[in-house]
Image (cartoon, rainbow over all chains, first blue to last red; front, side, top):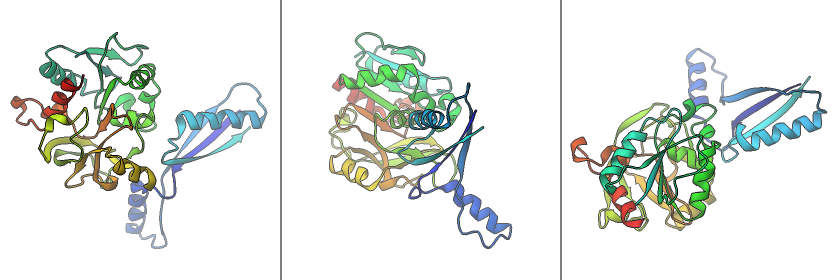
Length: 81
Length: 220
């Protein structure tokens, strides 16, 4: 079983990497780009055949304890087969 | 005074910190490895040094904050022991929630390595008393992730309680309210992005950080 965690800065926190990416996209002629925000994707392979709810609870605990810094970041968990 | 310096894989200012401590206190600090679960008996002060612990993987300071030795550092802080986090050490302290806020990528996206003028915002802490009447000092910074952020209420609280210790006079990284260093509510844990150990010996051409170590010697 695999879990996919997406971590990103919370909306109010300035994302300077995202700003640089948006600026570069403008330079390349993508005039319609209003903003870009850069995050992380972490794929976690889980052993055994947990039910999805248990797996999600485990991965959310991982996010709270390590994968995200909840002072500045939010996260999303998806459980994939 | 008995001091200790924590060494993580990727620390690179641990020996600079040890040298500054030895010069100031007259005794070499214990060097404590990240896998150690206890600090030497009778430790008064622990320094978390600058560097790139665990290669800055995941987030600066994130892995180090979950290492065995940091649990011992937290217990030491809980007993009222002194803790100084410099640069990466400050990042570790926020990641370990021993200090509020977080340190994020510099606004200019560049690694900034230069001397910066600082205001001494609170000279009545265990870390700054030796600055006496001085209003400002100069200490070098060297970091890519030094922009201090916290929510507005946390920032108001830090300022209201006099817990902002150093402020940039010419903000190099976009830190909220020009914050360069803070203490915890009890006043025994300080984190700062500038490197006082790099400005603590006349042979290095600068002495702007020496009072931090003198203050600690007086406090312990």
